[in-house]
Length: 388
Image 1: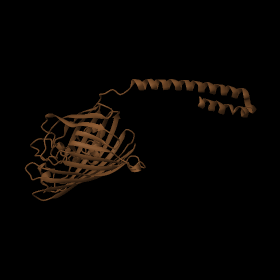
Image 2: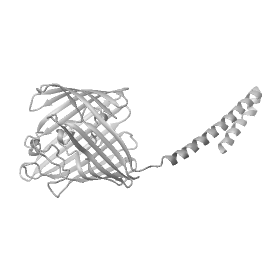
Image 3: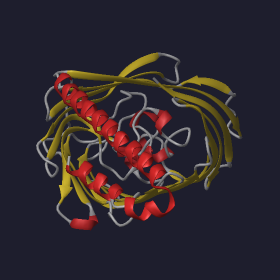
Image 4: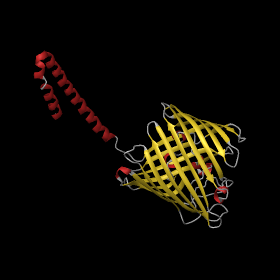
């Protein structure tokens, strides 16, 4: 009512000024304005009543379950590899997020995919119990994506989320040629650090040792139910999202493990890493770098490097992108030699993503792969990725 009184008072204050022109016209205008104020107040009262009723009707009910799915179909054309062009059924990803209380919940991510022998398998990629105590202290227990850099925590198994057709090759999953421990079975503590405009957050993770296994053996290098040692892998990361520059994120971390590759001596693995990301409505820049040190109790210590940088620009429904990836692994690294991932190569990827529907994207990507110790190769990829 106070706002109505002030509005009417202001309108009436115009009346003396208006008499010199046309008092009857202004009086009619004031009457219409007062009538409009009455109508607006009536509408506002109804809206408030509906909102109050809605808040009572939509009180949280537990457990609540949200289901999402992802799928992709890809066509590959190779040059210089001897591989025939072929269609590929990608991952069929079922993602379930269940809240069992205001602070607790479960995440389950299950993927169906075929291997190089054309046999389908089912992988439980993530199984996480989550508890949110406060902004500064949250913990996850189960199998989760290790907080290594940015890409591994931002993009999971649905290719629809990613700008490109796939992950940078060294950030790929353990059973798909990756060289990093992108999954962990254990406990992850994370949350915000009181830091004002710096916007700091942390991750502290402890889990089973990473496995380097002969590809002819089990295809999952994540220790899901057993471990080779009582000593556990540890991962620490610190991230900043400055409030003065929305969309900017940078951080650093260190992963430490004492692993036991198949048939080899125990090896200490250290992976310091850094990342820099900037994303807004139009531009995307992602850069990450890793230094992997392997120090076996019997043998020679080695140091490998891997990094990539990706930039893209949104142009309506189109997003052209460019990515450069560099990997350098010494030939005498016994752990990586076990999985066939030694050598040096640089990959330049040119691509275009077209979001032709709200939940479907078409991507085309050209990769030029320069191998230091082998002939150069190239690959053309066409992909349709959807979420449902």
